[in-house]
Length: 190
Image (cartoon, rainbow, N blue to C red; front, side, top):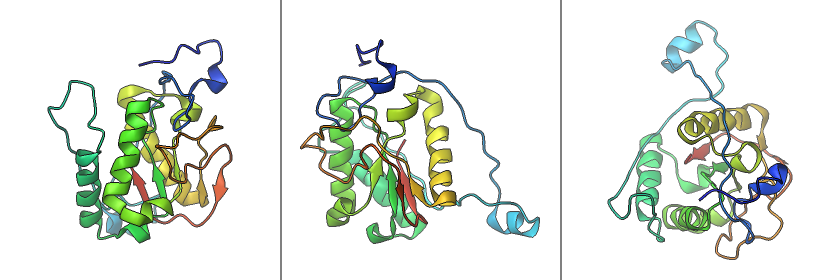
């Protein structure tokens, strides 16, 4: 559900933090021009990123609830990675959905571990929702834009407000400060 911390907007969204208590509604949008890579190169376009794999899964577990084991998300990750022809060790950054609900954050952590194995512990993970909130239907496009900018600028955005990590979300959740590093492959699950 949504957080009761409406009077603390800057600190309200706390994905992966033990003291998180819900998501913060945000707003925004992103628009893309998608075209074949060869066509973009021919016309000399500035190429921010290439979408090299995609997958989506769902289940009938619950209308809004998630399985704790992350099985469907893990399967979608594996299918997308296979389509993109990348291995877990090729991923430089995970742009998590990171809604700030205990159920979602733990579900995602389980899915990353299930799909990426031991490599999940070595890949930086962050949630931009900690900074911009959750814009519901628009958030997927915004997270793709953030992922493209991470590649463009070789920087992993931070998970803001992550002061007390949830022990059940025990990956490298890039707390508080952006991290400069080479970023060529991003897994985004927003």
